[in-house]
Each structure stands twice: as structure tokens, then as C-alpha cells.
Image (cartoon, rainbow, N blue to C red; front, side):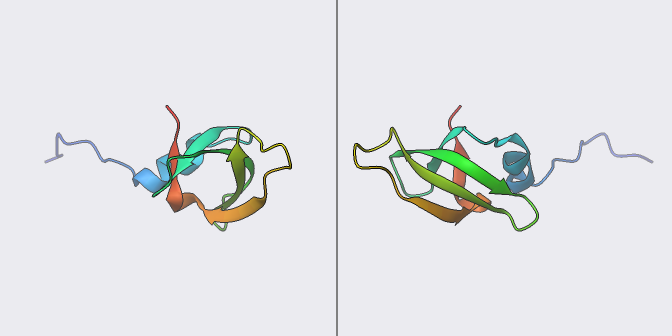
Length: 72
């Protein structure tokens, strides 16, 4: 007999599928907004910088996709 319950995908995978270059996101334990510059789904990493940009530039850093919350 089949179960009537649907299977829910791992939320981490849902997030990585929905993140695109240029998206603005929040990081865990951060109130600031960050812009996604690049994504490497095979290693579950992405590169972000603070948004809006600082006048002297915003440093880019690598972070795990698991640390990202999308700005909905």
C-alpha cells in the first residue's frame, strides 16, 4: 500500500536550486544583505559580497550554500 504522504526534499538542495548569480541573500547569523557572485553546486559553495556595495569596494568571500537564506 502506498503512503499518502509526499516526500519533502532536503531544504539545502531546494535552496541551492533556487539561488542564482546576482541574487541578494542573507547569511546565517548576519543581518546584512549579500549579493551572490558565483555558485559551485558540485562543492556546495558560493561567492558573495556585501550589498549594497561599499564606496571602497566590498570584499568577496567563499561560503557554504548551507549558510545562505534567500531574500524572499
